[in-house]
Length: 251
Image (cartoon, rainbow, N blue to C red; front, side, top):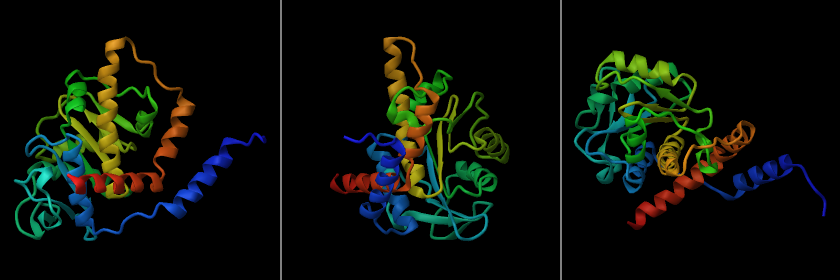
């Protein structure tokens, strides 16, 4: 049997996934509503703490879940569009005041079109211990060299200063662990931000559990980088999101 280079299989898989994994068409509000249900389904709700947003087509505006609702009860009609001063310009209700720091992330990262922030259980345990993420297993590799760490809590993020601190700490990464606080994931599209939020909580869970067996050994950098790029292919991200949507529909 002929031994072929790994690049051959990578290219072939990419082409076949593009042909066979056709993402479901949804409005931004439908995507956000499903994302909320996925976050709830994976145990990431914490009362009214946590937020989800998507950049609007209007400058310095974004869509977000109206304040007062939990992730598990979100519907497409529950999303409002707000401006740079958090005034509601489409829909009814108010934005979570803590989404103000999202404005700073959007301003600093033109490639970002969606942001998710949660106080998920295992991430919360990790950041309570002020521990950065260690990439030690394949399912953690979408976060390889893509998860920053903010070691000092700036307080409740309802003012501009917190947005400046968090956006600067995030830098060129898609994700960040916020010590004494929670997690933040960003994406070029809603599905990507959701995918990373789910996998970041899973990664934190693995790290917390693995500590019981002793020191954690990181994955080799070159292999982790290869897996990172493969597992963040849009076909995989969107196909996974569609699967989670089907799961949510069955609940």
